[in-house]
Amino acid sequence: MCGAIAYEAKPLNQKIDACHCEQCRRWSGHFWASVNSEFSSLKFVQGDDKVKWFRSSDLVRRGFCGECGSTLFWHPDRHSEYAHILGISAGSLNAPTGVKLSVHIFVAEKGDYYELNDGLAQKPGH
Image (cartoon, rainbow, N blue to C red):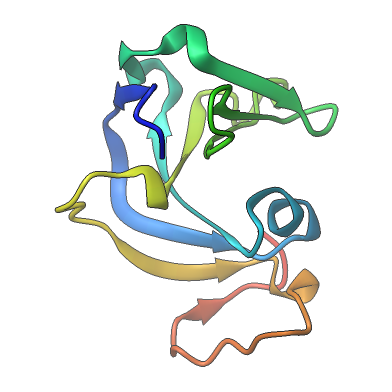
Protein backbone atom coordinates (compact mmCIF):
# COMPACT_ATOMS: atom_id res chain seq x y z
CA MET A 1 0.00 0.00 0.00
CA CYS A 2 2.75 2.49 0.93
CA GLY A 3 5.20 1.49 -1.83
CA ALA A 4 8.07 0.76 0.55
CA ILE A 5 8.41 -2.79 -0.81
CA ALA A 6 8.65 -3.84 -4.44
CA TYR A 7 9.27 -7.42 -5.51
CA GLU A 8 9.28 -9.75 -8.47
CA ALA A 9 8.40 -13.45 -8.46
CA LYS A 10 7.46 -16.07 -11.00
CA PRO A 11 4.03 -17.64 -10.40
CA LEU A 12 3.76 -21.42 -10.61
CA ASN A 13 0.51 -21.03 -12.54
CA GLN A 14 -2.19 -18.46 -13.30
CA LYS A 15 -4.48 -19.58 -10.47
CA ILE A 16 -5.45 -17.76 -7.30
CA ASP A 17 -6.50 -19.76 -4.24
CA ALA A 18 -8.93 -18.18 -1.79
CA CYS A 19 -8.24 -19.53 1.70
CA HIS A 20 -11.11 -19.25 4.16
CA CYS A 21 -9.38 -20.75 7.21
CA GLU A 22 -9.81 -18.85 10.45
CA GLN A 23 -6.14 -17.90 10.66
CA CYS A 24 -6.06 -16.40 7.14
CA ARG A 25 -9.31 -14.53 7.75
CA ARG A 26 -8.00 -13.01 10.98
CA TRP A 27 -4.70 -12.08 9.36
CA SER A 28 -6.07 -10.56 6.16
CA GLY A 29 -9.38 -9.19 7.41
CA HIS A 30 -11.48 -11.43 5.14
CA PHE A 31 -10.31 -14.45 3.15
CA TRP A 32 -6.71 -14.67 1.90
CA ALA A 33 -6.38 -14.68 -1.90
CA SER A 34 -2.95 -15.64 -3.17
CA VAL A 35 -1.02 -16.92 -6.13
CA ASN A 36 1.68 -19.52 -5.53
CA SER A 37 5.28 -18.97 -6.53
CA GLU A 38 8.59 -20.72 -5.97
CA PHE A 39 10.10 -19.09 -2.89
CA SER A 40 13.47 -19.05 -4.65
CA SER A 41 12.03 -16.84 -7.42
CA LEU A 42 11.22 -14.00 -4.98
CA LYS A 43 13.50 -11.03 -5.65
CA PHE A 44 13.16 -7.67 -3.94
CA VAL A 45 13.50 -4.60 -6.14
CA GLN A 46 13.33 -2.40 -3.06
CA GLY A 47 12.49 -2.58 0.61
CA ASP A 48 13.65 -6.08 1.51
CA ASP A 49 14.64 -4.59 4.88
CA LYS A 50 11.02 -3.45 5.36
CA VAL A 51 9.59 -6.99 5.15
CA LYS A 52 8.69 -8.35 8.57
CA TRP A 53 7.80 -11.97 9.28
CA PHE A 54 5.32 -13.24 11.84
CA ARG A 55 5.44 -16.90 12.90
CA SER A 56 1.74 -17.83 12.83
CA SER A 57 2.27 -21.54 13.55
CA ASP A 58 5.03 -24.09 14.01
CA LEU A 59 5.14 -24.58 10.21
CA VAL A 60 4.16 -21.22 8.69
CA ARG A 61 5.33 -17.63 8.73
CA ARG A 62 3.54 -14.63 7.21
CA GLY A 63 5.25 -11.64 5.64
CA PHE A 64 4.02 -8.07 5.80
CA CYS A 65 5.24 -4.52 5.28
CA GLY A 66 6.82 -3.10 8.43
CA GLU A 67 5.85 0.41 7.35
CA CYS A 68 2.12 0.17 6.56
CA GLY A 69 1.26 -3.38 7.68
CA SER A 70 0.08 -4.65 4.28
CA THR A 71 -0.15 -8.44 4.11
CA LEU A 72 2.16 -9.78 1.42
CA PHE A 73 3.36 -13.37 1.81
CA TRP A 74 2.46 -16.76 3.27
CA HIS A 75 5.42 -19.14 3.56
CA PRO A 76 5.31 -22.69 5.00
CA ASP A 77 9.05 -22.48 5.70
CA ARG A 78 9.11 -25.30 8.25
CA HIS A 79 6.88 -27.68 6.33
CA SER A 80 9.36 -29.81 4.41
CA GLU A 81 6.90 -30.81 1.67
CA TYR A 82 5.86 -27.20 0.88
CA ALA A 83 8.79 -25.03 2.06
CA HIS A 84 9.67 -24.18 -1.55
CA ILE A 85 6.24 -22.54 -2.06
CA LEU A 86 5.42 -18.89 -1.39
CA GLY A 87 1.85 -17.61 -1.34
CA ILE A 88 1.80 -14.02 -2.65
CA SER A 89 -1.10 -11.71 -1.85
CA ALA A 90 -3.23 -11.28 -4.98
CA GLY A 91 -3.99 -7.74 -3.84
CA SER A 92 -0.30 -6.83 -3.96
CA LEU A 93 0.10 -7.69 -7.65
CA ASN A 94 0.40 -4.97 -10.26
CA ALA A 95 -2.16 -5.01 -13.07
CA PRO A 96 -2.50 -6.59 -15.47
CA THR A 97 -2.02 -9.66 -13.27
CA GLY A 98 -2.91 -12.40 -15.75
CA VAL A 99 -4.21 -14.56 -12.87
CA LYS A 100 -7.74 -15.63 -11.97
CA LEU A 101 -9.48 -16.87 -8.84
CA SER A 102 -9.81 -20.63 -9.32
CA VAL A 103 -10.68 -22.41 -6.05
CA HIS A 104 -11.89 -21.81 -2.50
CA ILE A 105 -10.03 -23.79 0.17
CA PHE A 106 -10.77 -24.43 3.84
CA VAL A 107 -14.42 -23.53 3.28
CA ALA A 108 -15.31 -25.61 6.34
CA GLU A 109 -13.85 -22.70 8.35
CA LYS A 110 -15.28 -19.82 6.31
CA GLY A 111 -16.85 -16.87 8.04
CA ASP A 112 -20.57 -16.92 8.73
CA TYR A 113 -21.03 -13.42 7.32
CA TYR A 114 -20.69 -14.26 3.60
CA GLU A 115 -21.74 -16.82 1.01
CA LEU A 116 -19.73 -18.47 -1.73
CA ASN A 117 -21.80 -18.59 -4.88
CA ASP A 118 -19.38 -17.80 -7.71
CA GLY A 119 -19.49 -21.36 -9.10
CA LEU A 120 -15.81 -22.10 -8.39
CA ALA A 121 -14.61 -25.33 -6.79
CA GLN A 122 -14.88 -25.44 -3.00
CA LYS A 123 -12.73 -27.69 -0.82
CA PRO A 124 -13.46 -28.24 2.89
CA GLY A 125 -9.70 -28.30 3.60
CA HIS A 126 -6.59 -27.91 1.44
